[in-house]
Image (cartoon, rainbow, N blue to C red; front, side, top):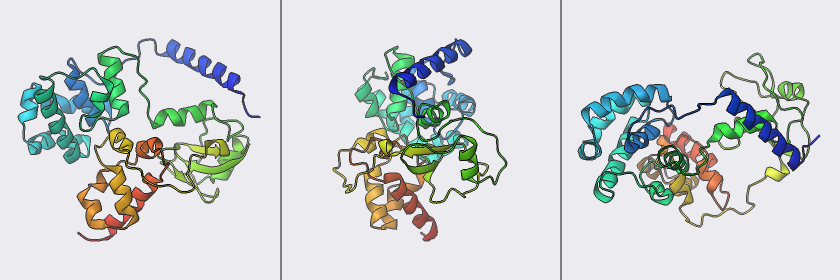
Length: 303
């Protein structure tokens, strides 16, 4: 039976109270003693653990101890140090460009304005909110795709009758897992492996659970955000939220027209498929799906 809005509010309040009791001293797990260092660490943490970032930045700050030094550093030198965090080239490029802006425009300080933070290379809404809340103590909500997956598991969505955590053998069909959770309910129009932003739609519920399966999400018609006639209006919102500092609107366009050369030029393989671009797009373009197709073409066609 679907929950009412009031029932969901009560459940959410109960979960928040339990989390506060379990984690009374919850804090940022990235080590920093200056705002610019947190900015660097947040960029390095994309597709990497905070624990590894905390180790890598020790060598980075030893060689480049302040904003000026990092702004003047060669991108190749930065990349050599941050490579263990993954996506070394794009992260080094963003860190270098970001530090240059801080040094030249903000006298080495991190701006305490949300919109100004979003204009920094490699800074998306999640990173900006973290800086605003953790450094400047301003109201901010730091969230990512994990929160979406957790709300499904907690039971704040309606597609599954009895949302729950299940331990099943690898190879178990999705249909069996869904049945163990009470089955589907409501007007379910899509079943996704993973979260709504990074997950992949499933055409057949006989799809087996694999090692990387972390969630099965059932979306109802109320969650249908697709546009019947999508078109890009070039608003730039996808660019402002991209954690990798890419330009998703162009990746979408070149993927649709199968221009492999331009896809390489715009660094399509650096995309981590987080789904932020598609989520924020007012036209509800299937940007991530197009990028996945584009990445496949780039990998298949020799450079």
